[in-house]
Image (cartoon, rainbow over all chains, first blue to last red; front, side, top):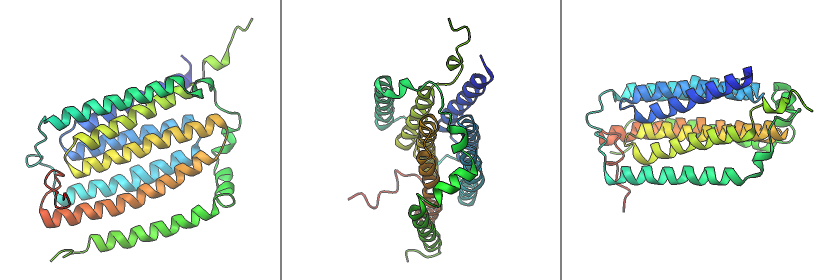
Length: 171
Length: 109
């Protein structure tokens, strides 16, 4: 096992573990904490793919902003006790598990025949692509219009969040 | 004869895609099975991240920056979605006193 393999399989194992634990936890705070662990491991996996800028932004945005917001809402709504949210093993749960397993089998089946099997190592250009310089260059030339649309989307989200969370939405 | 095949030591693209497929399935399972709206919300984030992982894997194995740009925009959409979605959850809780999605059925028919 080389260093790369140890890092990848270690991070992948923790990612899978934390995703499963997130589903199994009854307390939403514990779910959120496992999801944060998951996000940190995904950031590490992005680093193994030479995507340095995306890795840093991922940790900043997801673990830093989104999860703080989610934890804040959990504590604001005082959802610590899950007694009112009894999650019983209904028929729907078995159907859900069956369909998820079917989806996983389908995805693995497709992956087994895809041409992705031919790619055994990263492109030599990958080191250059992940840098801030290269990403900035592409973002502000080729993807300038989507980038500007993004700012509009964020504006809409800000206005929407303020209006929705205002008091007395429905009289 | 090649004594040291370096490509054997690299992680193939398939392993990243397998991990991504598994994480996506975890997210789908959580959305279908869990009843707490906030946990469903977190599972959606997990699905977005699974797709991000496969996009970055493709980007760096194919040597094309477009995948990383797409991840950038997915992150922006996820941030906007988190703000609006959590505001909706707060508004729902204020009106119905619950975040159990089984009880939130006023739009059902």
